[in-house]
Image 1: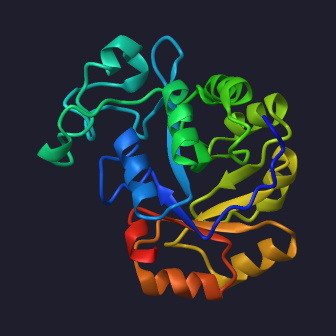
Image 2: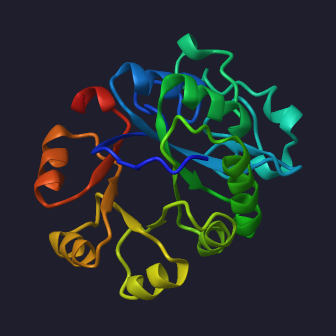
Length: 244
């Protein structure tokens, strides 16, 4: 992985372009690119045998035609699930992509990425190690290094230990009182916060400490402009078409 200068843009497609195509799928990443996004965010979880795949929920119930916990399903079982029909019949037959198959797609599209480690509870370290191993071996020199983010402190600690040179961003809903201790312990270089709770004071104090603030999930143009004026470095949006 080449140490290209990393410039994270203001607009990052959330789970690809989750408002326009089924989230965390190759089609969603392609749609984000088609709408003008240069960076995307997606979630990574592990199958039963420990293969990193793009998925958000602990269960497959919401975004596939299956039932049960993703962590209990083998890779083969996940590939039999339809991950598009829930969104629209237009996307029937869409599959859950593996991270290994996603990285070449990012290269082909020229998309930078925020890789969110979204582990099944208790599997933060394992999920981060498997994710970081693939990033280390497969990430193309033609793309800027990814940002690795997570709510899970064990995942962030493992990412820090395995890939210390990659930027880590700590995810919070509301900024906690002990945020500085967490950020320093995990050597994070940015903080990601919810648009529901972020305040100008949060943005100011984080920025003063040299930490870019990125805010999720922003689908309103006026709110995006307001956050930009408040000093937010980036926003994650399901609708990159609205902003781009």
